[in-house]
Image 1 (cartoon, helix red, strand yellow):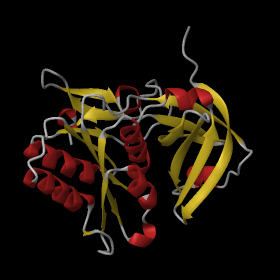
Image 2 (cartoon, helix red, strand yellow):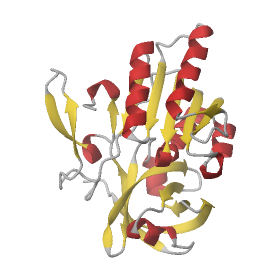
Image 3 (cartoon, one colour):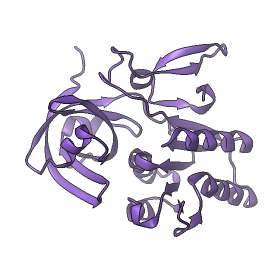
Amino acid sequence: MPQQIEFRCQIVKRQQPNASFVILTFASPEIASLAMPGQFVNISADKFLRRPIGIMSVDREQGLFSVGIRIQGEGTLNLSVLQPGHYVSLLGPLGHGFKLDNYDRVITVGGGTGVFPLFFVQQYCQEHGIEGIAVCGYRSAAESILTEEFTKTACAVSFASDAGDMTIAGHAGHALAGVIADLIEKKADLSRTLIAACGPKIMMRTAAEQAAAAGISCQVSLEERMACGVGVCLVCVCKTKGSDGEIENSRCCADGPVFDAEAVVW
């Protein structure tokens, strides 16, 4: 019997950390029990196409999960104004997430909305005894999100901002370079370290290049436009390299959204 993926979920909490972002928490024991870091839900926005949103965190005991939404267009604006008590149709959990089980240390590298699903990675690391290091890039301290949550959850954090008003002046790549250099200086074992990246493509490519140079495994969560979310419409096709090195078309929603960095055609 096929696993149910469509649910009608009630919003139980709404938070707005700043003018650009809203965090919605939904009640769904089914999704909360099944979701893994890197997976997403496809949320109905009434008269608009469903919106694919990465899962930010789960509370498996309470049967809750949260998502972070950037207010960009009519669809996300439609979702952002919903209040607790409202019911929403959504599909999930969808896609293939990060593979974390064989690592002792995970460095998350996020920018923009990419910090939301990476918080789920840090939550998973904390719960499973994996050393978690969080690297986040923002435009400025005023526009930063989840900094307190990352600080409480991860073993170490490094926050970068273009404005130069956070830990590191510059982008997330600058902060990641510092983290890698520190690990190398401490002669840390990098063979069981993973870099997990999500955010702007140029940021993920930089993270992948730095990982390769240091001999660190790297997985990236691609952000392509999606419609169906289940691999039928082919809107989100991206170029990847197969095991034989040949370029092939992959469906970001169904084959990803997480891919090994070396398989991505940037």
